[in-house]
Image (cartoon, rainbow, N blue to C red):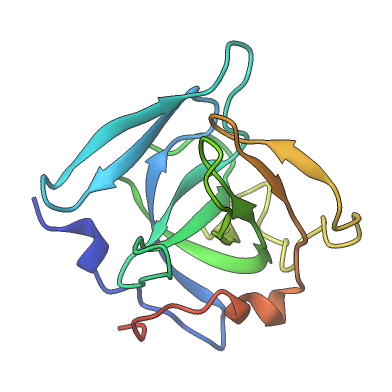
Length: 167
């Protein structure tokens, strides 16, 4: 299997589209991470009983953020995608996030918000609809993390800058 983190992301700045690889399908309690050395998905953590991921969660290949991982992406899709699915997505915003694990200092870990380009339900969505919510809102994440968020308009998604230029 090829290293999925090194696939071309096929960023189209005009159409605001690129590729995304899904690690954790929506509706799951299990959080999976892609391990590029093993070229496999590994179980990272579990959400508490009764909780599940509301969106497909993954990464944008050929990007590298300050935390050393590819840029995270959360994808609106009509139904859950398969783990390892390669999707073409339309970028609609950024969820600015800080997270800490087990009392460590918090670090920045933004997530790009996107819509699956193959969609009946979301085909007309071009901007984030959560941008009007207050930035002080928090929601639970895996483990002991709590992430304050603020979404930006579709034109400012680039504030989550990749350390490596898109291919």
